[in-house]
Image 1: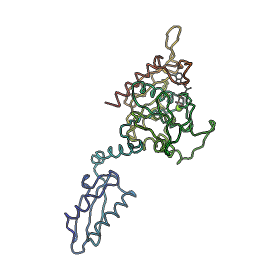
Image 2 (image 1 turned 30 degrees about the vertical axis):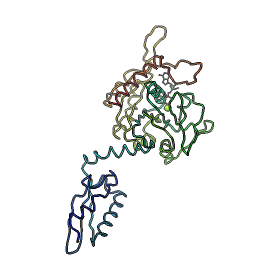
Image 3 (image 1 turned 120 degrees about the horizontal axis):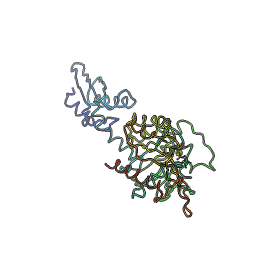
Image 4 (image 1 turned 45 degrees about the vertical axis):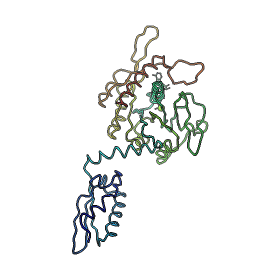
Amino acid sequence: MLKKDEIIQLLNPVKDPFLHRSLEETEGVKEVTIKEDKNHVSVKVAIGKTNTAEQMQLQQEIVGILKKNGASTVGLRFEQLPDDVIKKYQSAVEESKEASLMGGNTDTKFIAVASGKGGVGKSTVTVNLAMSLMRLGKKVGIIDADIYGFSVPDMMGIEERPVVRAEKIIPVERFGIKVVSMGFFVEDNSPIIWRGPMLGKMINSFFKEVEWGDLDYLLLDLPPGTGDIAMDVHSLLPSCKEVIVTTPHPTAAFVAARAGQMALKTDHEILGVVENMAYFESKKTGEKEYVFGQGGGKKLAEALSTKVLGQLPLQQPYEEEDVFAPSIYQQDHPIGQEYHKIASKVVAKMEE
Ligand SMILES: Nc1ncnc2c1ncn2[C@@H]1O[C@H](COP(=O)(O)OP(=O)(O)OP(=O)(O)O)[C@@H](O)[C@H]1O
Ligand SMILES: [Mg+2]
């Protein structure tokens, strides 16, 4: 007949299927009772998440172990571990999951650029934030996660296509920034129709099938709104931080708040709000005109308990003669300098 100590010894090495730690580490074996006359063992086990397929498997595993070691019948009950225990091991699980997406690299930080509605400048902000981070000496990559409305390649003036080496896609490099976009895999700008499950797979492929190397920052240009892609990113990259872009119009800020609320709900830290198209400055008089209204960025930041990282006026990049990159502001451009400040704040927040 099995003894209580022996049962605990047998179950201690068994792994919690969610936290990937032994039951010994999580102190998951909660109760052991033995009915000697019937050779019946009953056990209560606490795990990270109950009532799942993984629990069913674990159940079979435990029953198997106990029967093999002499129990005639086994009664098994599951409960959830206390929140603090789950939290303690969860972040390690998330980190290793993300590291495996990046080919084992644990140091890459993820930043998603989101907005409530389209056309507010997410892609412009993504591309220019990437440029400023690169100018600060960081190794940067961009995933153009807007798989319908991809625009990063055009904005950066990328004309080449990625090559495949050892069954991995090598991102295209532009100004030292590694870029992957759906636009690379579409012929002649023709529209693509994605079905639900394909969407998530696409984002997954942008990690698993791409050789990113050791990046410091990977920026994700999200499609507008809080749709499937945004959700996939949330579940794929739990540690991903967010920058929310809005225009100064109060309604735009209100809509952007939805994207922000989702980030908060999924526990994604919001780094701050970028107010784009904040004003127009007259070249002749230097006077600022608030063509799209005022205060939206501040209002949004307050609603999300975060800060405004910067305000970008309406202005086009300089037209460079030798480099073609229609949406990139040069370092000495007033908006380029504004992006430099935003990037410095982002780095300070990410590396604090
Ligand atoms: N500060 C600015 N001054 C002038 N033009 C700008 C500014 N910011 C963005 N634009 C222009 O506004 C348009 C929309 O910007 P962008 O494509 O970055 O927005 P988006 O939020 O990514 O849009 P979508 O939702 O379609 O992906 C682009 O043509 C871009 O060049
Ligand atoms: Mg865009």
